[in-house]
Each structure stands twice: as C-alpha cells, then as structure tokens.
Image 1 (tube, one colour):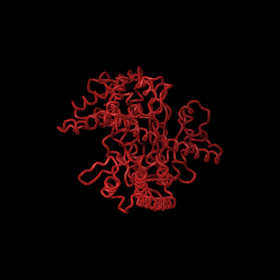
Image 2 (spheres, helix red, strand yellow):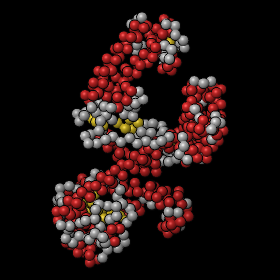
Image 3 (cartoon, one colour):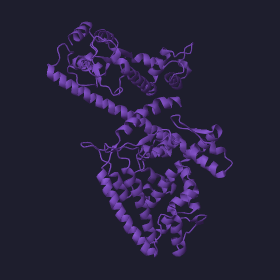
Image 4 (tube, rainbow, N blue to C red):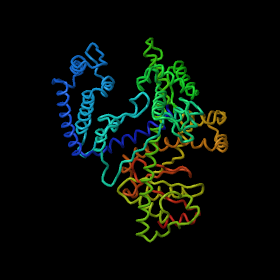
Length: 562
C-alpha cells in the first residue's frame, strides 16, 4: 500500500490540517436561541406524555418507560429482556402510527438528542475566534473513510425540520458562501465498474434512473409503469446488495415477508448476474488471502471469515463484499480532496500573479527591457499563467523585494535560457537552486514508487540489463500509449511536489543565516522541465513565474536591464 500512502494519504495530511486550522464559523447567538426553543418544546411534550400515561416517570429510563407502555398500557410488540422491556427505536416506530403517545415519545427523544448533542454540545467547542476546530481522522475507520471528532461534524442532522436548523447555525464568513459537492450514487457506480455488469453499466451510461430501471427489470414491468413503491423497494435492494444485505434484513427494511425479500434479491441477481459473480468472488478471495483490496490497493483484513461462530463468519462475508466498494469510494473521495486542494491553490496563485503583474506594469510603464507580448516562444513558455505584460520584470522584483522568503519557478523548453537565468540569480543574489528534474529522477530508481509504477504499467520490457529503467524503451511505450503518461504522472508528480515542500521547509529555518550579498533579497528557485508545472503553492510561499526568452542576446539584455 506504499503507493496509496505516498499519493493519497500523505498529501491528504496537508488538507486535513488546513481544515482543522481553519475551522467552521458558528453563530453562537443563534445556537443559544435554538437550545432555549428546544428546551421549551421538550418540556411541553414531556407534560403531554405524563398526562396521557397518567403517571410521572423518568422518560430517559428504558426500564420505567417499558413498564408504562407494555405493562400498564398493555401495548403490543413488548419484548422483555433481562433488564426489562425493549424500547428500541424499531419497536416504538411500529407502535407510533396507532398510538399518539408513542409518536410523542419518539419526538421527545429526537429533541433531547438535538439539544444535548448539538445545541448544548456544539456550544462547548466554539473557540475565541467564533469557530469550531474539529479533528479529522484518516486512519480510524476500517474502510479508509475520513472520520470526525471533537465534535463529529459529519453527523449534523438534516432530514428533519428541527435537525436542519442545527446546520443553519454554521455560517460562512462575510462575503463568502458554503459550497457543497458530492458524488451521485458513487458506491453503485463502483459496483457497476468493478463487476463489469453490462446491464448496470448501461443504466448509468444512458443517464437513466437506475432505481427505476432496476424496478422495471426485477418486477418485469415497463419502465414507464414503475410505481413509487416498486422504485422504493428496488432502491432498497440496490443499496442493500452493496452491504451484503440478507433476506431477513431486507424484509425488516421493507416490512415484507422473508420469502418476498428473498425473491427480490434473487430477481436482482438474475437481472445483474455479474454483480452476483463479483460478490461471490470477493468472499472467495477474502477467505483465501485473509483480506480484501480496493481498486487503489487499500487492504482490509477479514479475520471473521475464519471464526467458528456462524454470526461472525456471516459478518465477515458481508465485510468481504462491501469493503472493496466502500473502500474504493473512500479512496476516490480522498483523491478528489487532494486534487481540489491543488486546484484551489493554483487558482489562488494565478490570481495573485495576475494582480501583481497588473500593479507592476501599471506603475512602471510596462518595464524597460521586459519581453514583448506576442512573441510566440514566450507565449508558449508562459501559457495559462498570469497576464503577459511585464511579467519578467515584475516577477523578478517581486521575489527579490526583501523581507520574506519567496518561491520562484523558472520554466522553459530546451535552449530557452533557464541555466543562464539561474546562474545570474545565484551569482547576483545568492539564490538557492533546487532542481526538480533531479528529484523526479530519484523516484525512478529501483525500489522507488515511480520505478514500481512504471513496471506495473509497462511491464519488464522497459528494464535494462542492470535492472535500471531503460528510458528509450519507456519512451517507446509512452509514445504508443499516451494515456500511460498521465497514469504515471498521477504517482510521480505528487511525490515530487511533497519533496519540494519538505525541502523548502527545511531551507526556511537556515536560509537567513547564510551570508548573502543581499541578505534581505533572497529566493528559493525551483527549476523544472517544460511541461511539468508547480500546480500548487509551496509551503504557503508566494510563487512567481518568469518567461523564457529564446534568443541569447535578448535573454542577456532582458535580465541585465531588469
């Protein structure tokens, strides 16, 4: 799982740290008012329950509540245990439609939980800055999902009207908004992809209602005639299969007989046969190897499969079916978080560079000696960067303006003058030069992630006699299958960026102790090949961009004048 750690889990640390440090803003006054409203409603319902039962008792005591409901009031579904009658939610929900007092008890429970866990509970976590700074764990859950604690910000209710008001106390900073993004039916889509079932894949490829399609095929009715009840049942089967649901579990969920539930499941697997084969294969392989594996290589041990206890073995089988799907979904979410962080950092950097460029060019008349806009080679070297005007000059001055350690990237093709620029900055300003090409090459040494990934994608045909990678053979493979390059970059580039960040951080502590010609005008310079760009801000420092000027005389004149 080293590749998963290097490309997903380790980069994710930075984002989770930023999330914890930033926190989320809370309207404390609104939260307090909501708590007072809940307490008033709780007292009112409590009084009504006591009037209808004819007795005051501790509503939070399952033993006392059970005696009132099943002994005094003689309600059905009473299940007596060693500690008394069960008053679990599933029991009370069966009684609620016919007994108003039970409906009020369920509402009482819901309101008291909202008040204690959220209205009162959240208030204790608000810090002096008016924000809650929760803790996010990436290694606690067995499936790899991110979990939240102190408080659990992933479990804020929304399905009820009162519950949704808890979310209303979380507010963005002035001038900003919250953006919510999620994947649609990600686990079912992963099931379709991993199983390769053509019917399930077709439903998603054609962008139709997958639950309605499942209902149509399972119940043998035209798609246009699927009833809401049939769709609801099909949806329960769709998601239930992902979690290895049994006929008993489905019958409880849908309030149908066990035979009906078994028939639903059998029809489902007849409709999607490859799904059945895939799930059976996961159980078989988990029994053979002792673990399951996600699409990205995350391993989950399943020791329950070897238990002598039938219930434990059954649980292990459900884990074996579900873990590859739920774990892959968790991996995808983490990968998306890492990429979103990089994209946001790149966008912020782009806007910062554009702003600096406009200010500098406006105040200096465009910059004497700066490369002219419109030069084809220059446009190519600086494409998709900040506005072209006077970028060479403004970037140079911005990095060397003094006071703070800055980051500068020099990017260009062969013969574009990178070496000349770097030599000038090293000689004139004592800049530290960090070569990203060298860092990237290290990752392709035997045993390194880039080496292993290249072998995984292209096979041993790219190996030289000494066990090193044969660059010519690699280039030949990548030329025939260009898509392999992006897969290779997904492994290597994040590692390069992380190493650069670590190196820059280590330089930060000693940088100012160097005896430079201009101690207040210093920079770390990152060099890299054309086509590989620093896609995120490095260690929070500013990032500037310099154009490459191709003609030798123009290069010398440009840098001498600026």
